[in-house]
Amino acid sequence: MKTMKKTKLGGFLLAIVMAVLLNTNANASNIQITTEPTIEVAMPGLKVVKFSLSWEYSWRSAQLNNWDGAWVFVKYRIGMDSWDHMYLDHSYNPGTDLNANGVPMAFTYGFTGQGDQEKAVGVFLYRQGNGQGDINWQNLSVRWRYDTENTYVSRPQLYTDDDVIVRVFAIEMVYVPEGVYFLGDGANKNGNFCKADELDHIILPFQVRSEASIGFGLRPDEEDGLMDVAGMLSVVGSNVAQEGSGLGPTDPLALSALYPKGFQAFWIMKYEVTQSAYTDFLNTLTTAQQTNRIRVDGNSGVDVWVMRAPGVVDRNSIRIKTPGVIEFAMDATPGAGYDQDDDGRGVPCAMGKDDLLAYLDWSGLRPMTELEYEKACRGPIGAVPGEFPWGNTFQIGASAPATHLINRNLPNEAITLPDGVNHNNLGANDADRMALITRNGAFATPNSDRIKAGATYWGIMEMGSNMAEPVINVNTEEGRRFTGRHGDGRLAVDGTANVQLWPTTYAGLGHRGGNVANGLATGGGGLQTTSSREVAENTWPHRYWTGGRGVRTATGSNAW
Image (tube, rainbow, N blue to C red; front, side):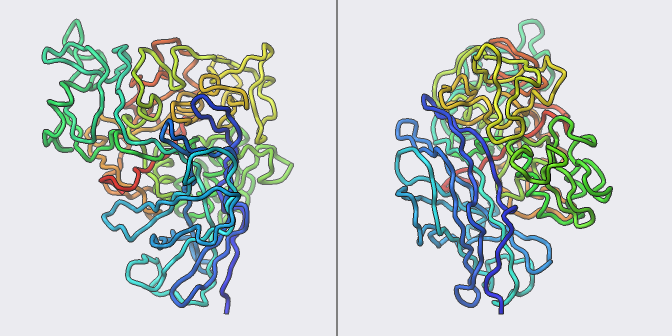
């Protein structure tokens, strides 16, 4: 009888990244599962998965009322069956056997959003008290009940002696607290949100003070009364007049109370999805699902790069390691072996919108709305016309040739220019795009502040550079139908996301933030500014500069 089975170390998500807090130093976070996860029988019908978790320079701030944490979830398979998602027993304390480094742990389970709070898709682990420093939590465990009515196992029946293999995944997240914030920056261009009076005169940024419904109207123009860009919308009226008006998702000019507006607390990935994370994702899918999540024929043979053209193009490093099965690996430096330290594991992954939605469904997260994007960038402080996500109206841009990207593909990859000045983003004036796409957090250094690191108010990285950020827009009816449901860990048989009221044609997804294809923007304009909505509605397919990240509404709101 087998009662324990170890998973492969390749099953964890490794993010070699840099953390930046407002007015604090920046350092590598290096979140990882540090021991081989094991699964063992606790009693008939009950198994326990054990693992250890660490990351560097964690924090919890009383001043900002925010902190970082790890979103942890588990995949399992029986023998050589397909991988499935493990729903956790949410009554269990993951730190019961904690042997930590003196940092008390708090935890919050996250549910699927289908109205069933028994279906815990994962768990947040984070600091219980204020402070900062390394996390090294040993002997963590989560519990899995597999023989009761509400365990949602994919097989009709599981047995105590089944050969269960597990993989534990961890994604570093940032908690954005509940509170008011401003939409729009007052520049009143690039399609940004604004507040209008009864005569439709554009006056001020719009303050979001609750999750109640908000009415919208066509944005006026001085010449013909409409926006030059058809379909752009802006907030109209005051919060008092519009909130709680009963407007629903079918109203063509309204956001319902269910559409996440950023007022309520939410968690957001600190970094864009990395290529190593996407590789791990691919390696838990069936071959039928994998086919739709890569850009080449998965049966085309070993050593084929799968997310861009053949070869290491635009820093694409995901390669077929074993055809037929199919197994993928990182290989940014061909000839030196797979999944090495210099294979670019911290570089963001180029994805299409459908790829991102599938990844978020699989991981139990959801796409963010364009309102949440502004809250995540600006925080609770007042808006400044033309401001960037790092909080000012100028950027320290660098169009760097390949020689300025040092330690390429390594965990400490960074930008160093001859003048020795730190830069917080790259422009697109250089033909060598491999030098433009950088490791997540590459602009942060131990001595950089928020501006030089390119961090948001809450310490979230690359919201205005590297890859474009897909968001649920308000321009389209499909976008306005979004209610904030989370992924349940399981995909459709063809590898697509299948969460109710998520975009299906992807018209409801646009983009926010800058990317390496934008070029150097100037203060007060450009896609990189926090409030620019120039591409909030677009049909961009997979590009070398489109990636993304996920969010989760914090427990206790109307969308688990």
